[in-house]
Amino acid sequence: MEMSVLALAFGKSLLLALAAVLPILNPPAVAPVFVNLTRELEPDVRRAMATRVGANVVLVLAVAMLIGTYVLDFFGVSIPIVRVAGGLIVAFTAWGMLYAQQVASSEYSAMARSLVDDERVRIQAFYPMAFPLTCGPGSISAAITVGAALHNPKWTITAANFAGGLTATVITGLLVLLTFRYAGRILRPLGEVGLVVFLRLSAFILLCVGVQIFWDGASELLRELNVR
Image 1 (spheres, helix red, strand yellow):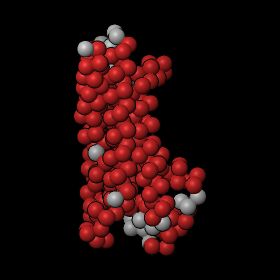
Image 2: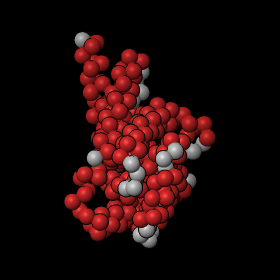
Image 3: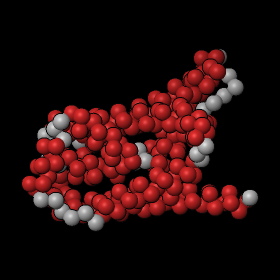
Image 4: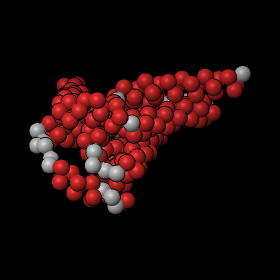
């Protein structure tokens, strides 16, 4: 009976974490950005970048789920503040992508050469690709919220819940890795012009997401002021 209860807790928490985080993270929406930033890289470097981004997404989500609430409490920061700050970062990044000029091929080659260095790839794979473009404040807030809901008076149930939640983060990271690794093949039929148009549309959607995240956080802060 105990094993069935633990298995049920594991399954419920896994589905809860996937349902809460994956739709917000939405790897296909970020795939055009990844393709645009890595189009001149060697295939092995691009694959390494995709792998690192997936691993970083797992790391960020797992940390947020496990200790996110404690870190925010320690610094006296609320989730609405995280949403406001993160929404501004996402919106600013999307605005730059939306109005960015086309980069010449020679400039792309120079950017690619600068990414050959493993340390440079590691940095770019975390910022801005993993955070905030792929795993932004919305996903982090959702992971923190899920982590807070996984606690249970029984430590065995809590362990099963967090095992399910962490498994969901690994699945999410694998989906990000596979989406980015094969994004070039998926988007290749669009052609150069189609990719530019799709990138602009993705940037606009990302801008809207950033504004929405900012507004959600600001609205919560305004409601707290009205209550006081």
